[in-house]
Structures are given as structure tokens and as C-alpha cells.
Length: 215
Image 1 (tube, one colour):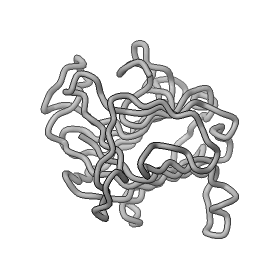
Image 2: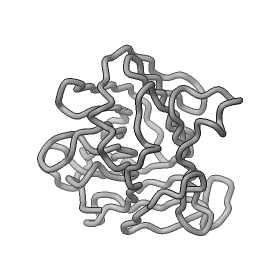
Image 3: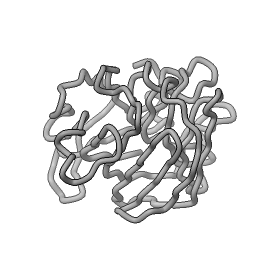
Image 4: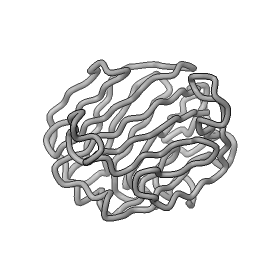
């Protein structure tokens, strides 16, 4: 089970004075799920609204997990605003339950399973498209990974956060990845990333691209 409240996506690294200019996606859960910045098309699957971290009803997304048989998620259709060149920043609040998830070895529900947070595309295995994704493993590792191609990456740091609200922020450029938890830097890694692998794909919250479930 995962719970999300507002998700923000910026193009390039963004200073306070540039927030409005560079913001391309602003998803809120105020009675429904909508993009308040560019009105992207959002398709929901098996989702409900629930209480957010302030106790406000119908103000957070409730994502049923893999073990429900139909993982809760939503898809944001790809657009010209979701094309990355110099870099991007994603920020959101979430609370998750790591009791069970999808076992990447065989796709079954398992206490050894993983939870996908966000993906643009997928992991490139099977029917899943190439892309970039963030997930939690069963042992509390927070992972940023990419498809198995010229930019195959797997950045992992142990950061278990079961049943607590936290703010997650990812700053990604072609040569660097920074992960912040509650505004505190947890991981900073140099890498080489080809954004062309990501730019043809839809954005998913709660699952990988179509490997996990059609959307």
C-alpha cells in the first residue's frame, strides 16, 4: 500500500525564483486527481482518495499494492512538456507499507517484493518499455534505476521509511543524481544518462510501464 500527496515535476534544476517558470506537472488530490499546471491527461486504475498527512479527507491518493491483484496506479500521458534535456526534478510526499510487494524474480506477491514509486516508462525487461524508475526493495533500499541499455543504472541507498510520511525529491541530470529525503541529501552520484530513452514514454505513479499492468 502506498499513499501520495501532491507530486511536482520541474524541468532542470530549479531555484525558488524559477518554480513557476519551470514547473511542468503539478498533481493534486483535492477530491480528484488532476494536473493543475498543464492539464495532462491522467488515467486512474484501482485507486481511492484518503486522508493526507494533515488529516484532511480525500486529499491523498491510496494505491492498492501488487498483492491486490490489480495494482493501484495512475498514468500521465506523455507530452511535449515531459521531454527532458538538461535535467529534471521530481518532488512528492508519500507513505508506504513494505509488508509485501512484487517479487522481481518471478512476479509473484511476496514479502521479498518491491514497491515501485514512480516510473517514466519501465525497466526494459519483458514487455516493459525502456525508462527510469524509483522503487523500494523488501530490505528498505531506495533505488533509482534505468533500462538495461546504454544508460543502465542502479543507484541504491538503505533508507527504510515504513508507515511514515516523507518528502522525496530527485534531481536528475545527464551526469548526476541527487536524492533528498525531507530536504536532507541522502545520495549524490555521478553517472551517464541518455534522456532519449525516457522521452518517448508515459509517466506512471505506483507501477512500472505496461509490464506491471496495462494502463
